[in-house]
Image (cartoon, rainbow, N blue to C red):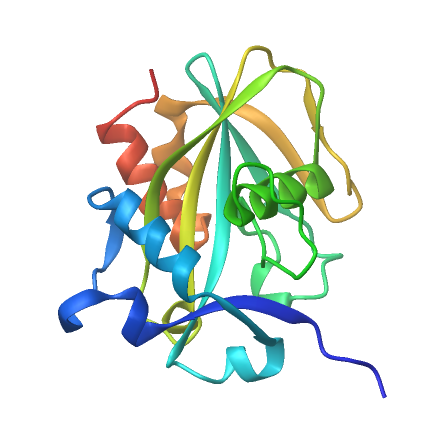
Length: 200
C-alpha cells in the first residue's frame, strides 16, 4: 500500500489568535504569523488534511516580478486536475513536505523547492515575504493558507519546466485586469493587491 504524502499544517485554532479569521490578503503581523507557524506546525497525511477544516495547509505562493512585469502562467488541459484547465495564475505554489530544504526557514525552503520544480530561473533574484492569503469562501480555501513571496528578478531569463502542463510569459502589470476573469482565486486577490501596491 502506497504511503500517503505528508504535508505541513498548522491547527486553525493556533494560527489565528483571538478567534478572528482574516479574509483575503494579509499584510499586517507577518512576523507574528511566521513565528506561529514555526512554533505550531506539524506534518499529517494529505488526505486527512484535505478533509479537516481544523487544519490549515501552509502553501508558499510565489510570484515573479521583473521591471514592470509579472510572470503569467496558463494551465493546459493536459493537467490531471480538470478544475484548473485553462486557468491563469501569477503564483507558483505547492505544499511543504518533510525533507524540504531549510534555506533561511522551512517556509522559504518549500517556496524555493516549488519554484525550481515548475520554473527554470536563470536570472539572479531575491525572495521577499510580502503577505499571506486566506480565502474562507469555499471548501478548498478553508483548508489552505498561502504565504506570498515576491521573486524579484534582475533579468527576465526564465521559462516553464513542464511545458506539456503549463505555459508562461511576462506581461505588464497594467495588463493583469484583462486576465482576472480566468484567474485562480488567490491570483485574482493578489492581482488586486499588486495593482494597488506595484512592486518597486
